[in-house]
Amino acid sequence: MEIKTIVFATIVLALSAGFTCCTPDDDTDDSIAFMASVKAPTRPQERNALVEVFTGINDADCAAGHRTLNGLLVTHPGRIFGLNIHAGICADNTYTTDFGTELLAQSYLCKYPAGTVNRHVFETLSQDTINHGTAIYYPYWPNACDMVMMQTATANIDAIAELDTVSRQLRVGVAVYYLEDDTVHETHKINVALVEDSVWGIQEGGALQNPSQYDFNTSKYCHMHMLRHLVSGQWGEDIVPVAGKQLRKMFQYTVPQQISDVDVDLKHLKIIVFLTEGQQEVINVCQARLSLVKK
Image (cartoon, rainbow, N blue to C red):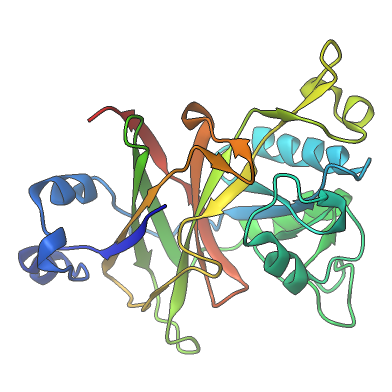
């Protein structure tokens, strides 16, 4: 399994457009062409919302959380994005990742199904107000998302992705444009999440709480928006916030045949990219435009 991060741009482009600079080995015509098509918006835009749902197959109420997330995604296409993170005791080591345990721990979750919205502390909605937890019980996600989406983003983000279905090699190009300087944080983090839809398996309470994703003939449940891997690592890759420039990075990853003993179907993958202040506050988020190719 290979993971590689490339900070991209030629010296000529760096001088003319303010891109970050790459190593000579990565300065290929193919890489230049790929990255040329990713560009973050330069005008102020409303902030997007990221809902990270902590879930598990053994909790009968978790399917209700899945249903709630689905409703948000349908109601706000292109504005709200979601990750279903199987972690903790209710997950029973099924569909888990190397990253879920730490993500769950920092949220101070008290009861499933719960999730974070932009990893922000909503004092009146938090499950754990003593520790200023970011975990919110699922009925309150819409309210939290509305509050996030009313804000103007301090940085815009764009992403493209290309997946070779023969070699299973994935590359993701990310562009960030800061509309203002950050006087508090010297660095931010770019996070790249590999997400899979249509993973058929078991889910306690699926038939009752979310029957639209349940097959009554096979007694199987269709898991959606499942976090499979964080290509950028547990807490993302550093980026230095500089206002008024297109800052770009390219990530590469070889998608394995299986993750946690469950097959990975390339046709059902999507890439969610988000920018954070350290391990917490999500500044903005988008879904990469993904192309499947054969090389």
